[in-house]
Image 1 (cartoon, helix red, strand yellow):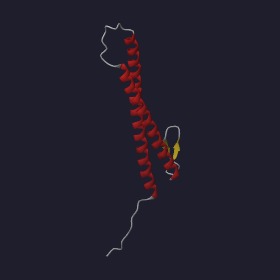
Image 2 (cartoon, one colour):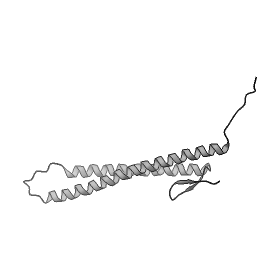
Image 3 (tube, helix red, strand yellow):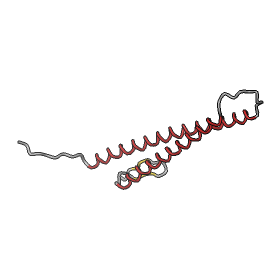
Image 4 (cartoon, helix red, strand yellow):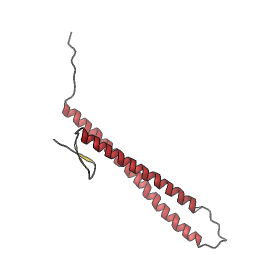
Length: 121
């Protein structure tokens, strides 16, 4: 009978696996942040268009019916923009937590400029 043998990967292989995992996490956070920023920019542009339209409608003669309420549309845009800004802040907090954790466990040196990993070795 063979004695029980405990087998483990090398520390280098574990470190590489951790690096890949944390890089993927940072890339996912970057992608999410980009998506939220894109939505925010679109809503901000819409807000400006609605605001401009509201200004034009204010100058229309009273006999012209207004189909949409620009005030409620603008309020919804502002509320959504505020919610998205909260999401952006939360994603950034997560990114900083990931970077701090990686530094604590000395996975890699982190570039604060772009949030990418750089090997110590």
